[in-house]
Length: 423
Image 1 (cartoon, rainbow, N blue to C red):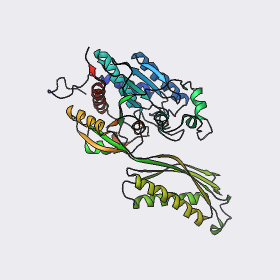
Image 2 (cartoon, rainbow, N blue to C red):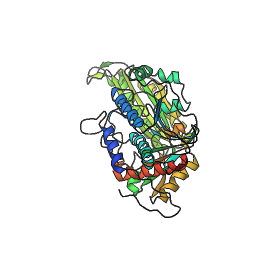
Image 3 (cartoon, helix red, strand yellow):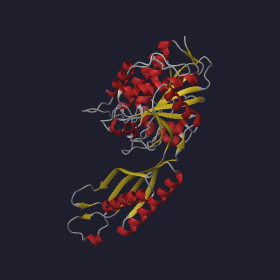
Image 4 (cartoon, rainbow, N blue to C red):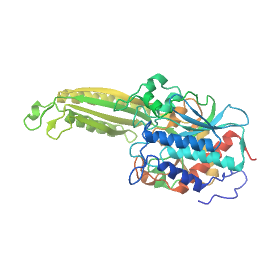
């Protein structure tokens, strides 16, 4: 994509980022944990995640950044400012993925931050404030729950000891896995942040459908994850009369259908999804004794989300009574909706428009580290389009032109907030 060489007076200048270097970075990280046929699998604290972390740390050090790792494994690379260590401008996201991940979710935001630093280095620019690139641990929540775990601990929303004691589905302890891969750090991240910006693919279809170049994210909708366990009685599928069954699989299906019906009654903002499901025994000719599954509820309105939470529990108990099963519910994660800092949101919008890009304000449907950092620092997010709205999928794709536009906006925001001056 050709960037404008000269901009009118009063319009923020586009920093000369390198599209080729940015693309090469994305492709390089795409080879770490690569899946056959495309995509990547870098589940948090696996060997693939360690390889990605090692590559990131090497890239940070090659750019002259001071690298630190905190006790939950968050990685911070800081470019010094002329004013000392106070008031860093942080750019962040994550490099862990789901098991069927694409090349862009999270990773792009971190690599764009590195590209901003590389560009400032190329220019010989100095900044009044430090600039920190952050990669947070276990953002996806695909292996350990809750999601956004590293940023949540960093922001003080979850005790470190509690986080380190978490177990994955196979019983592995988070703290043990962190030590195993060599990223149980002893440092502390920046204590003082002037602003936090996170650049991310949209992971949805809105920007592409409307032909908009930059999404100005005003906030993140609330998220509520539940794990529901249904216990019935195992029996022969051919000899047990229907009226005498206590079928955990049947009960689970009824709860899921009830949750979807409930969501429709609460309006289009209420979302529901069933992800993980396990039946025991998982056999074609045996009535299930136990069903364990998850329900993901999301809504930008916290009161409506609370209503959905209560309704789901009511549905589960009603089904238990009707099917002669026992149902227990456990909350895996619960995050209220977040509104980003108005000044930072306005800065994203003004900068993108001044650079000649079309914009649209929208809420994020997915959770992001920015919603945790917003607890402790002025924060905002920038979205770029996702082709087909596809994400958490090996076919996830964003065109290089869109990656470049988002990085140009990020670079200008970081330069302005850090007080950049040319060599």
